Image 1 (tube, rainbow, N blue to C red):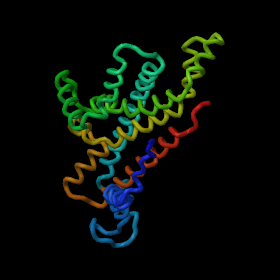
Image 2 (spheres, rainbow, N blue to C red; image 1 turned 30 degrees about the vertical axis):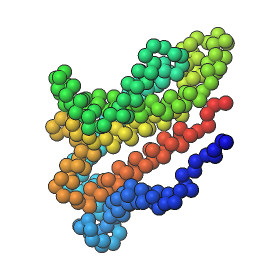
Image 3 (cartoon, rainbow, N blue to C red; image 1 turned 180 degrees about the vertical axis):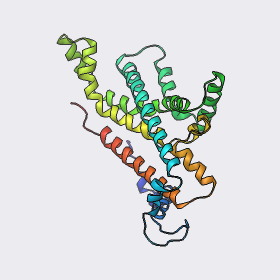
Length: 269
């Protein structure tokens, strides 16, 4: 006799466990966000609502350091996301539209490997490789490491979008005497745009928020926002750190939400 679908929501304790997980995950973020608006110099004593720490981020004694770190973070993230998205688009085209070929499964495994390997292992391996080829650590080393790390994050939404596009679209263009290049640039590429945009945004936010790999491969005197925040925290948590963290969290939430809705746009019929 066929069994019905398993609904884990019907199990006793499911709601309580779900609520507990949500509290553990998001309560610290809520606390940081709330206390970033605290008027007190203390991070534990509430003294009323104020934007003084957000003003301090842009005009305070450490504002120059954080501005430089922010510029570095955005330059690295934009560069890494752009290059990784281009590579991921080409990889998805080859993997999905080229049909079956030898080592196809291995190729997919290599693309997905950064998602499965612990990030600390990737960071150590990248550092050893850069030392082996005598690459000077700095912005270039961070960009190269982020490109490799971001490729699978860009690949997943792009490949998912491409799998939803029927091959008949390109075949119809070829039947109408379009070249393969024209079929790709004028038919397939526009249909893939939502997936490409989603992949770019996802790669961008992964690069922007990365700390472990960046901390290993950055050179002396080169800081991104995550490493600058970590360096400031080691000297003691100040309220302005909460303000910076909240701003970075806000950017992350906006981009991830935008990536989600772009990826969920209607597929071509």
